[in-house]
Image (cartoon, rainbow, N blue to C red; front, side, top):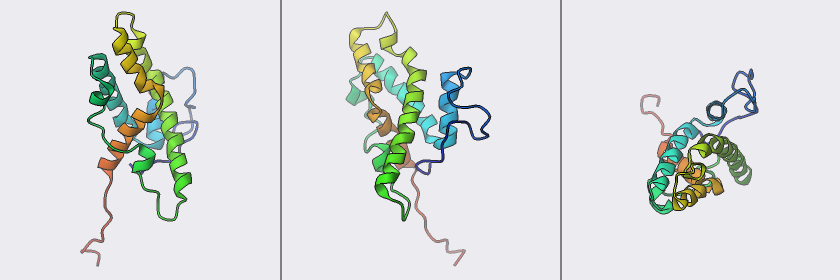
Length: 157
C-alpha cells in the first residue's frame, strides 16, 4: 500500500456512491478499500479475527498481540515534500471512513449483538468499536510489513 489514496464518495468508475442504500455494508466497505487502500481489506479480516478471539475470552491485549506497533497515521512516512501534519490527518480521515464502514459490517456479528453471549465477551468486543484506535494499529501493522525500499538498480546504471 502507498499509505492512502484518492478516495471519494463513489467507486472508482463513479457509478455507485458508497452510501447507496441498495448496496450492502460489506460492498460499501470493499468499494472504499479498493478506492483508497487495499490494505483495509486485509485489516478487516484481521479485525474479524480479533473479534473472534475476544468472543472466545481473550483479553484485548492478547487478541491484539499479532498487531504490535504504531497507528497507521504514525507508521507511514509522508511523501517527500509533503506537509507531515496534513498527510497524517488525511490518513486519519481515510481510516475513520474505513472503520465506520467496517463497523457496519462486523457489529451485527459481535457478542454484543448476540443475546446468548456472555457480558464479558460483549464488553471485550465493544472495545474494538469504541474508537478507530485498534483498527488503526492493525492497519499500521500491515502497512509497516508492506513497506519497501527504493534502491537504484545496478542494471540501470
